[in-house]
Amino acid sequence: MKGLMQDYQLSLDNIFRRAEQFYPDRTVHTGGPAPITMTYGEWAARTRRLGGVLDTLGITSDGRVGTFAWNSGRHLELYFAAPCTGRVLHTLNIRLFPDQIVYIANHAEDEVVFVDRSLLGLFLPLLDRLPVLKHVVVMDDLPPGAPGVEVPNDPRFHDYEELLAAAEPVEFHVADENQAAAMCYTSGTTGNPKGVVYSHRSTWLHSIGVLTNSAIGLAETDTVMPVVPMFHANAWGLAHASPMAGASLVFPGPDMSPQGILKLLQEQEVTLTAGVPTIWQGLLPLLDGVELPKLRRIPCGGSAVPAALSEAFREKLGKPILQAWGMTETSPVATAAHVPPRHADLPEEEKAKLRARQGVPLPGVEVRIVEPGSITELPWDDEATGELQVRGPWIAAEYYRPDEGVQLSTEDGWMKTGDVAAIDQFGSVRLVDRTKDLVKSGGEWISSVELENLLMAHPDVKEAAVIGVPHPKWDERPLACIVVQEGSSVTPEQILAYLEPQVAKWWLPDAVEFIDEVPKTSVGKFSKKDLRTRFANYHLE
Ligand code: ADP
Image 1 (cartoon, rainbow, N blue to C red):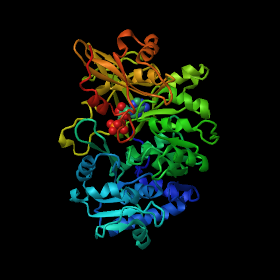
Image 2 (tube, rainbow, N blue to C red):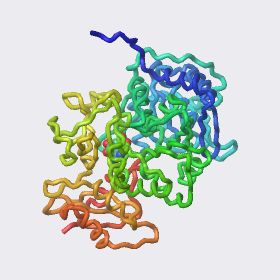
Image 3 (cartoon, rainbow, N blue to C red):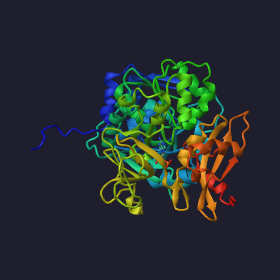
Image 4 (cartoon, rainbow, N blue to C red):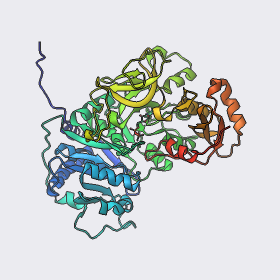
């Protein structure tokens, strides 16, 4: 028997109208040198006119609308105006190398790019290499009269506010929920960056998933500050989920300094803020004596959240970090690590171990681990480790232009994540490593992530990254690259002596190197690739 319910399209214009009609007085604040606050009511009126701007500029009906921008209220206008008029929002990662940005913008065929004025200096040198680009719209995020890069005297360039002032508001209607809403490229640690294409339906369902308390969990009473960039996997869904719930939003704008972030947390009375571990690592030294009584949740992911970092937040602010796992390909939030009621009475150090896991899948997402290269499932005993595979309504089935030959899914329809994990009997995922970061010693795997977690709990260690370096006998052995806390001094022997009782003997790194800083990727993760290049000729006996 068939269900007899309406075939209602899950499209982003529905989220837009909610914010417009139900939450017109909730606010969107952008910080930085030229702060602006507007209500959702004002934002909605501007977003409708921005839809008119896209028509005036002659952007084709499903044309790609690029953004090269910080997190801001204007970026949020683009987040809705592009997809709600049938176009496809394409967030460009401002921190990539110029060649990668050019490759990505050309691959996606961006017809227009909206650029923050503070980023114009980065964008202008790319212009001659973007043949499809018809328009550049400059969003002035600097105070009036502030020095900055001159806008070129070129008919392709326009001023955002001038276009908006001259435009007519439009009606939003998307007829097919499976239409593309947005695109985001993964930075591509191997090969060229790959485009992930989100549909209206996947984004809508992901927003609902993010709203649930078993995920990030936010409501009308929240003030949400996504520190995670809007060009990094949709700001983890917060830029869609917040208008859906009526939560006020705070964006850091161009000021991503720890001081700037702390100021906004305090002044705007933020209740929920999300970012990668390096952001919270940077904030930590500023937190002594600071109180943030309104802050109730700090979702964090993108790379493993060291237990020591989460515990430091718990000690200083009374709130541990909430770890979540996901990928650009999974929209991105797929699992979250809440401490379940069955473990509510555990001592804090045991709970810290649970929070160091990647957690349980969100409603709608399924996980499994398989033997690498096969679809043979492994048991959920928290011991067996294998490739993590996922499926669900907001998981990518394939990359943009699948004919380029990258196979994302298995023959039975699960997405291959390239992460290696164990799963416990309750479905909580524990990531052991990325396939390419595992250290292969004499045919056995050593988890770099686990070693890093232990090392970063050492009081003299600020950052630690473990990589495999060539070894004549064992093929590869672990090398620990350590950044020491300012003012501390520690020897390699002391580091190894500290690890020794905590790991199997053959897991102990063969050497410890002290470095000034762990190189970071464009989204602030440890760049093991750069470390491996640096230590490619490292000599082990
Ligand atoms: P990139 O490949 O550019 O880093 P993503 O931001 O999509 O792109 O990264 C996804 C990857 O980040 C995951 O496959 C995983 O390896 C890592 N990751 C994300 N969240 C976590 C987490 N909570 N713990 C450990 N690793 C994580």
